[in-house]
Length: 226
Image (cartoon, rainbow, N blue to C red; front, side, top):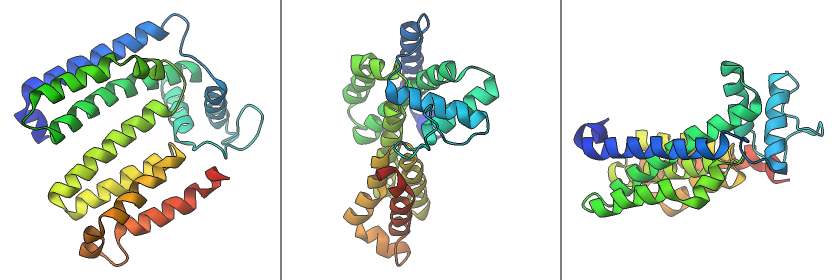
């Protein structure tokens, strides 16, 4: 990656911040585990039922239609690979996600303010020490992972505006697709960007790739909006 090669000092700084942030969340959750709300219970029970081969059903044996399934699927996947309980798997997923959020935030700030080291150095530190984000990472919730998707989408959108290549559009569509299965509001990413940037729609296809992706995302995710 060109960024790592050209910005070695900032890359090391971001890596250390990410590790520090993950350690903070681990220290908060290692004794009693992460916080668990009603939504968190649904995510974990759905992951457990998925592992047991019962499908996407929550603890009430009701199909998971009010929550997108990606968070539960990831927890189930980690639990299957590591043989950890879904509760512990969710804890480690959030710890890793918090480190990813710090890295993505720092990289995004660098892309936006390439000539302002004060912004991306201090901005990354603010993300790391944010009490709100630490609390979010210390609970079984999908919000933190959606924040990671949001930052990734912003980075991809920046890349698309700078390069305008077909690859950047596909990358944007992939992130938008995945974010839709993380939170219902994720479907707004590609639809809003497609509407506000018609020049890219006309450049590559008619109808545009983003338009096609947006329509399919709205159709697939409509079941979660019922």
